[in-house]
Length: 423
Image: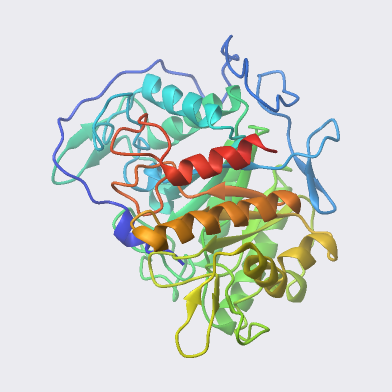
């Protein structure tokens, strides 16, 4: 629903540098860092490697190995779409200072700050091509980099270090290539990038490699593809793929699988109920999936940056809703409450945020919408992952004050932190 292609990949010339980090052999987890997780809220049971306990679904809830309900609340980190190193700035660095640099200290500093915000999950966007090709170099018009390790090893390092801080990780494929937009589905004829994924079967085999390589991390959740969308034929094909993917992943590992359809939900309160087949969560019921540990997802924005809005009202001139009463009604109309209360299915809002380029009264409404939505989701015990861990200078839904990733939360970030602290 958001304008992804506009928000990513814009960069300016910066000095090229590579900071060598300690090499970790193979896929084995590191020992836990001594201070990780100390003094942080919601300390969860940990595995022998110091990672959070594996999750499983039980009715509408996610639970850890001890049977405790875990509600995931965290942030999206989009940097792995821009560069194979994930774009991690050091404190005090300018906006683009971390692009093209692999610096373990910068990664850990960001993860520490994310944990300080009250998060227990981070969602990592990345490119299908990078997982498939596993590059150890990157070049664009500003930089030509050779990394000390490959993309997959850097990605796994982030997963390790996140786990050591009590953070779950949602692994998510956003697009085919760094330079491409978001395809309807990631295989032909829905995608033009046959050189990356030539068929549905090839994407299934790719997910088998992900499951083998990342399945040993107990705190990883697998999101099959970000915002799949299309006509009724594409919808049927997507859910046929999803069932096949779940079956193949389950033959390898029991990690939770996150499933979404379309960009998100939407409704005009002047014309209830929603009429478009993609506007509600009815797909959860009309396309039942077999298997265990399935977590359903949707995205919610008052203003997506691309013209879409979750809830509006009005006949001639539509107003984007922000008041709690309207949002409660809208969430019920699109089926959020029904999914968790009646269908007894687990649900997470994988993206939700406030448009920080608005001004005056519209900005106040964006922030009120954000706070009201998070409050309702908390009351219904629905997890959420806010968009995004990024400065508002670069992304319109960024929750960081300015170009320095450590400048502190902006107004939207403060709304998120207040919600996370009140759990």
